[in-house]
Image 1: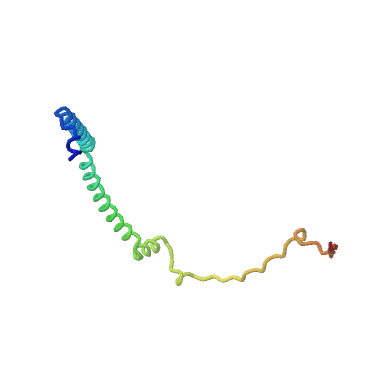
Image 2 (image 1 turned 90 degrees about the vertical axis):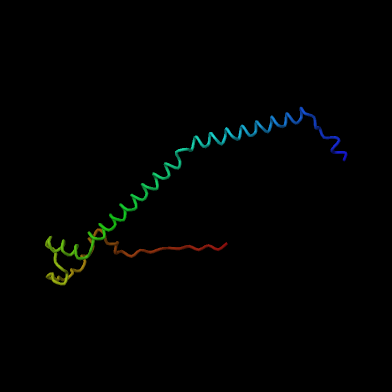
Length: 124
């Protein structure tokens, strides 16, 4: 009970607390409203980005199908035949003996005179 008697319960104390709380709520309100005002177009931009992403995905899919159809084996084969290419199995084969390598020039050969190496070992 001693703590209740020491608390300041005067009108000026409660008025000061009320003003402080009011200022805190007002600052919070201003902060929230300013954040909302600064980010009002985020949702619209996000929707636009999602729509653009959908368009790009469908474009990628159609281009992928185009590439797959253009690089099909039958189409490549037809193009090769139209440009005068032949199958390897049908091409004429030419054989030729592989010549042995030529010996290096005399200036490139190591000297033929014997070399001697002298080694002296000294133990300590």
